[in-house]
Structures are given as C-alpha cells and as structure tokens.
Image 1 (tube, rainbow, N blue to C red):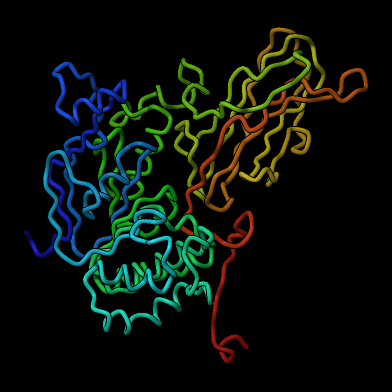
Image 2: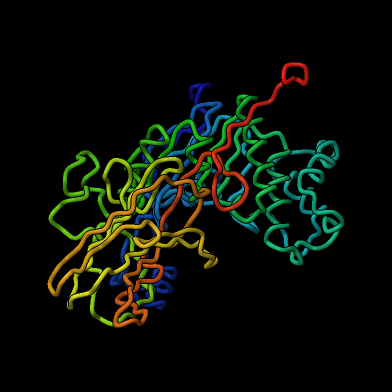
Length: 425
C-alpha cells in the first residue's frame, strides 16, 4: 500500500438479508429447509475510495445512504460482504455514543479500557490522562459510572479519549452534534491542529457548513453507492439536488430544475408533511418554492448568497390590496425574521376572481448556519375586518450552509481590524 494513502477501500459491499418471517431466519441459522424466503438489502454496493495521508475527507448523504456502515467497516466493527479495506496508520474512532464504553464503568475506568483496546500500555495512558481530563472538562463526573452521564458529557469524554491518544487517523461519525457550541469549537480547533500535523481525518456529518469549511474533499453516498466525489462546494451542490429528487439531472443544469419550468415549483422542494394551514378560501397558494442565486430550486442556501422565495396565489373573489407575507422560524419555533408586501410598501392592487399573482421575495442570506422553517401568508382587510385568506405554517425548511457562524441568529457581517495602540492613534 502506498505510504501516501492512509485508507483504501476497494469494491466494498455490505449485504443484509431481510426476512418476511422470523422463523425463516431461524431455519437458515439451523440449516433447515431450502425454501427460505429473504430479500437482499445492499447497505453498500461496490464502493471504492481512498484517503490520502493528511487529508480531511467528509462523507455526506441522506439517511440510509451507507455513511455509518462504511465507517464501521473501515474501523473493523463490521465485516464486509465483499471487497477489501487497507489501513496505513493507527486509527482512533468515535462512531456513536456508547461504542467502546462499558456503562457500568466510571469515566476513568473507560479511559483505560479504551486506551488498552487501541494498544496503549497503562504507563502510556497515565501520561495522556491529564490531557484527556482537561479536554473533556466534566469535573468529578469522571469518577462516576458513565450510565449516569448526559449525552453531552458522554460525547465530551468519548471525543477527549479519541483525540488525545495521538492517532494517525481520526474517524468521527456525527458525534460532535451532541456537544455544546463551545465544545464543538474546541473539537474543530483540534481538527485544525491535526491537519497542521499532517494527520488524517475522515468524518460523517449532516453539518454541511463544517463539511464545507474543514474538508479537502467530500464523498457523496446515496442508497449504498458512491455517486460523487470532489471539492466540497461541488459535492454539496450535488447533495442539494439529491435532497429534492433531481439526481438524474446532475450533469445537466437544464430548465427542468430551474424556476420557470412547466412543472410545479413545489414538486421540486422538500415539503413538511406536518405543516398547518387555514384560511377563508377566498385565495389560495397555488405554488411556491425557494431558489438560490443560480435560479436552481432548492431547500439549501449558502450563507452570504442571495436567494428568493417565490409564491403563486390564485384568487376566487375580488380582493382589494391583499398582503403577501413570508416568515422564517428556527427549529424551536421562534420567529427569526420575515416581511410582507405592506411592510415593503408594495401595492398589490385589486385582483379579481380567477386572477393569479406571483410574488417574489429576494434577499441576502445572513442567518447563521442551521435549519429553519418557512411560513407563507396571504391576508388583508375585507369589509373593515382583518382576514386570513390562506396561511401555510412551516410549509418547507431551509438549510443554511455556513463556513463561519457568529453569535445570535444572524451575522452582522462585521469588518474587524486589530492594530497596535501606536498605529491606531
């Protein structure tokens, strides 16, 4: 194996047998009968990849795409059905909460247990113990059984062990999403330190902002197959298309994935199946979507770029000056921002029955990276009374990808300078 390659995966497949009845599984285990019915499910199918020494490589994909499976095979937790894996270097892995930890042991005991499993002597673990404790920063809880830990405390200790045993290859599966923002920042600083030391990092994350910022290269899996590999921005754009079912349009930025095509816009969006709606029925949102600065319909927006929310409203009676509104909430339900045609001092006229109006809201995305929910409204005053004609609550999500998050809900886009006191005077 080439010394410049830390991990090589060659034509890897993992097949599970799915049985219609539990007794069929038992019959096969006991080698009873020939007519045993099962279906083959490929968690991975003929996947090949390599990770060069010193690279930080991300693996992304939808749920069930095979991300965790391939990491478990690389680390030896699972055996492949077909294919080979070659490793050049000492691996430290943080795959999931609980992996490699004994719940009945204290934190200290688990540190020694994990260190021994990786191949360290007790003396070597002694030398690294204080660094592990300082990084985890869970205080006296380290002397309690880990079954009493919160998920946040657990991941702090598990990551502290994984990252402080001087691995040559670090493998992480989504575990950082459990820690608080300060711990995550500490972990990513450690990532930067590892990169500078020429070590190899392979990690799975749904945090596309972190994937974009820290990865040299990204691999995209879908339904157990590798469908993309390359620069972070290129693969994230491809992933955005996978999320809205446009995989067959990867090589063609055709009109069919752009605004203005013949099909409905909302059919190209990920919609919330549990949205709420109500209204008088005098008007109706016939179509809606979000699209990025390239005109591609998407639920995913890059922080700092412009994007548009577009609405099509059909009227069933004449309505004077209807107000069209868009609002954005965080996942906790707090309304972060929003506007409407009245705030923007835009006259909408008096549409008649059968008329269809199209409203576009274009703005820069300055929200922090994360998940948000979009609500739409068509309201107004009818015979002097405030009337909701149609309202769609939390109809679709927006995923904001950011390589730099600041404090709070949005980025002030500050320009910061630092100079000596003598220069500043």
